[in-house]
Length: 422
Image 1 (cartoon, rainbow, N blue to C red):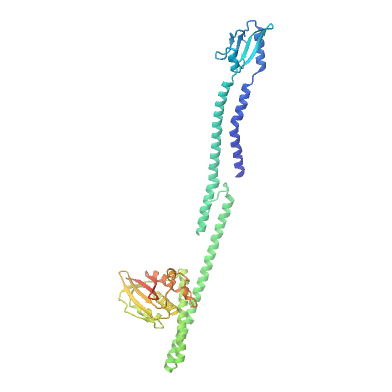
Image 2: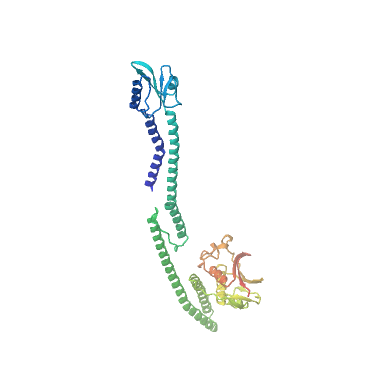
């Protein structure tokens, strides 16, 4: 590309200097006088006593006039030139003396054509300049077109390709043209795209494998946890029969911890299935009275203060709704450990179930992000948790055509669940 540009500049300079160079050469050639011709003409005139020129002589490459000593025109090859020595001198004509038999008989005036020649040369200059500059314009125009086709346009395509790759679009190949300046480079770029696509697919498969492993482990953990829960319930019943309060307290604590483990495993399992797009949510028309039993199952510490739930038909998946209530109540146990007030409300679209504790709530600037994945409040330090509960609850409520709202109210944290009316 640099070589082409240098050649183009050299050609342009040559075309700019060519007209004056040729013009000067033509001017010098045309303005030079043939001395042999002049001497030949002078000899012919001096050989004639009447200073006459025969018709057979010539033709000569110049115009001339013959004057006698009184400056009368004896002969002139043109009618519009100088007819006196003064005029000839003023016109810068060449003046030669005519001697016949050693006596001055007159003068031979060779007319100067420099004015006419200069006009012709100027016209020639103008024409050559026009042709030269047109040639320069065509050259630079052609170079600009070449530059656009083989440099600028391929570069723009590479920019678009790079933007697409940065945005994650690895399916669109980069058009290659070995004629343009980026030919080999674009091929390397496209190979990089293929390698990135392969690497992304491998990463995706690896992540899927890890999530499937987590899902399998979560599922496998649920069985022994359920067994521990069942055995703790049996032992709790026996301790009540025997009146052993110490044993009853310990067994009840074992059952509560089993419930906590079960809730954590459920969250992990649900989150993994959501990422694998295998989490099934089947929201069907359900009596709203079923909500009470779901809350009772989740409230193993009996901290929820009930109110009457309006009777209506809502869209709900009992299994997933139970998981949502478990997450909300379990969070209140961990972070607030106060009584939980249950309130209800209803409009034309939703049945609202609100659960509010008195644990101090969440900093206001963190509320908009509290349901993000792995996000926990800054005041939750020292309390075990994964930051998955509210995120999973939001996903499940959305899948059931419902909604969830988190807010601070009266010195505590309030979660409102909206179930869509059927």
